Length: 273
Image 1 (tube, helix red, strand yellow):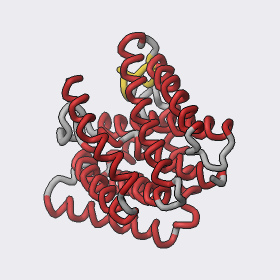
Image 2 (cartoon, one colour):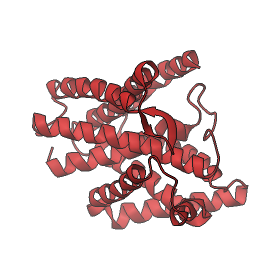
Image 3 (cartoon, one colour):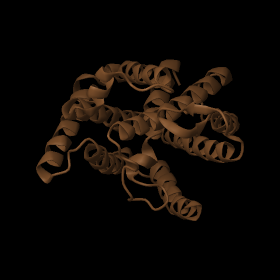
Image 4 (cartoon, one colour):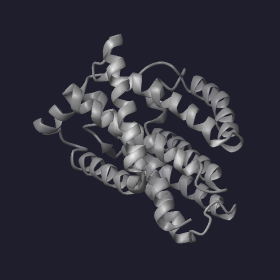
């Protein structure tokens, strides 16, 4: 499994890096849209939109929400992003070690409400990623920065948790995740944050604000991972798919990014980089 993960990463990471840094935003937007569609198909299948007609409807809802957010909420997308992920974080923290109450379970199990939640989260990821990429000369580098931050956090969390993990982080959602893994993620994340600042990726953001933004983005990436796990647990699904060898499905690969990238982008905007 580890060999497959490393091989897949060795192939995909250079492609992602080159695309983000050297392709124009319109092409990056199309590539990100393709990723969102693949993740959407997997997510919608989890919530029982599996037939072609059902998937077509689900994709139409995703497209509709994306267009509405892009056209009418563009100026407040940062606020919307922070509010949504703050609400999700509260739920994850509150029920990390306890079963969801019936009303929240119904919200995630009822097909239409689950579809709207999933589509909104995916739409925000797409729109905020594009917004960051085209925001300034540093936009592509900052988008790559937050992606690497999440990848390093995932790596640090995996190895630290495997070696030292004892204290459960969210027993009711993802029993294998530990606070020791979070510590490992923070160590690698802060090292990368310091490197990013030294490379000038922070723009006008101060060192303290940059480190704080990086830590918040890293922690929210863990929330994103747990949020997908919560969905899968509610629907009694183990993996979202098997598109990427060693990594599961596309949704499994970007579950942390769909939380971290929008929050990081909102932070960059509000801190005035």
